[in-house]
Figure (tube, rainbow over the protein chains, first blue to last red):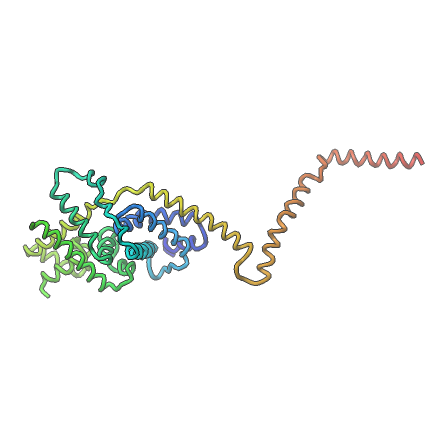
Length: 179
Length: 148
């Protein structure tokens, strides 16, 4: 029995300490994923909390032979984010571009800042599936097989999505450099 | 598909870090990268993109994480209470299961009462007192017999 199985078995048995330990283990990755998908803190908090609650209430639906706990939790978070984005796109705010973050950047590299802003905008404008694939691949460090599990698509479909996303972002950056 | 096209495709799928590419593609990719200027330019573009992606910040969310941990932990505590209630009055199960558990819980005050009464010896403070009282009662009996 691996660590995931032991932990989930304890949670399924109602062990609240095991649950708390799992929450502490996964909260950062899930909240960062949700933030990068939604772009604002308030919705990130709601989605992350709901995903972690489901770890407690839906623990019995986890299957060791299908996915790791991390992949399973990312899948829950992913579905919640997609539902949220489809329900009310107007709520997605560009907090990533907020003033408080701009202040942290070095003023000596305006060109770099301009490119960073352009990339953020380009990321926000990507279709949901492309954005999700890039975030899971680049930031969350999942393999393509794991990302396909999170997004519930085939590995071939995922690779096509990833290629389109990276080519699109590269093209936008090249355009910016040329102009 | 030419080697260069394949190189570009793999980079679009897996990113700039060749270590994350499929094992059998890594050696030819590195070879092409060392020889082809076009491959190097493509790789540099992807490196620049990856570096910019790394530079996009995520704010520190420590307070939010603490709030979430507090909220979800509270949820498990109330669920535990639900579990106790579920055990006492099961939602499913046989009639006997449904009957004996509430009966057991209802008997608890009686068991507690018996235990407490036994512990406090029904108001008799000590064994010594009870012996004294008993002797006193015997002596009263004897006195009554003599007086008759």
